[in-house]
Length: 210
Length: 210
Image (cartoon, rainbow over all chains, first blue to last red; front, side):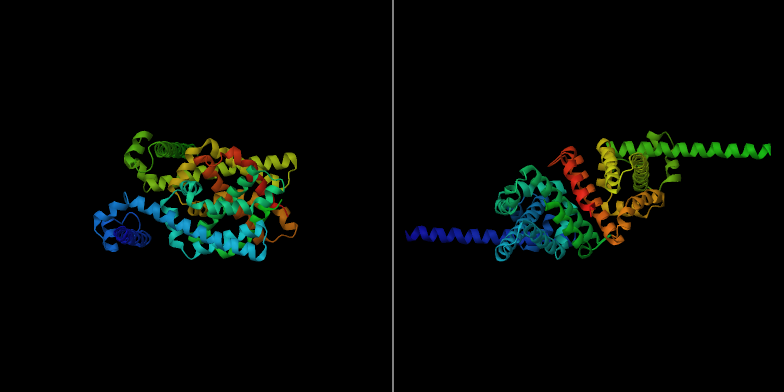
């Protein structure tokens, strides 16, 4: 029994070390991709910055595009979950309706991208928006987030609006918000995000109102 | 007098020849860019396809990016003017209001891009959307089109809505339509353009309604 316990703790230590190395690779790659750019970064730079051997990189990732996609995916899942938690607390605390809930969720994401322009630029430059949306739509890690959005829009469904209409409206909102985020946060042109936000939110209210 | 007339007709012939050569270069470049792609196309290919000497290319264009930008600009101006003419006829014939006019204009552009996916792909792949919008916004060739949109929205202005609100709503509509065009015409995912059009137009009606 004691022996098996020792084995377990040994495995845990090895796993913890592995995880640490992988995370160091993630951090190093993110730093390099957002400063030097994808083209200028080679695997050797990433391994060096992470303080691991080049071979270690290939234990976890196929190539630099693989680690890029994983970085974007991890960060996206994290922020979407944070936005969900914040929205759920808000909705509970204030007994907020669907429209306020959806707007709070969107506002959380906009605030995140506003203070993480690097991340937004990384997504835009290297991933097609269609692919990015598809990856997130298919993700099992986001079932909770999708469940929350589903619950938020239940108000609609019980009001007799059919599912197809709700899904198309959600798609319209996602396209609109992501397009505005790019133009107004990255290009800051023709309006900054703070200038256009009131009109954007008013539009979303109009889309969601019956 | 006769002599001067001869000179004129000579000049006209030279100019017509020049124009013809330039147009052949435009056609050849468009054909190559949309089939082989920008990276794979060199100036020599364009000149050869157009049936002119390589040096002739440089009489009109700085490099392949210059001719690309000019192609996109020319085609955009042409289709925007066609859309304007069609909209003006429609509005006059049916005494249509602002919202119907704007929707007709957008519908014309969507139909164009639906049957000219190549053009849409060329714009998307090679020009940032921000830059494209800026070039069109600054263009003197589009003063007429802008005038028409201005007149269409006059209904709004006389109704007491201020200019800033109108401009922001127009910006929201442009972002939305171009983003949906890309996802639904090029990617055809998650909806084809015909599937999403009714929801899109309903949204635009909501945005423009007082």
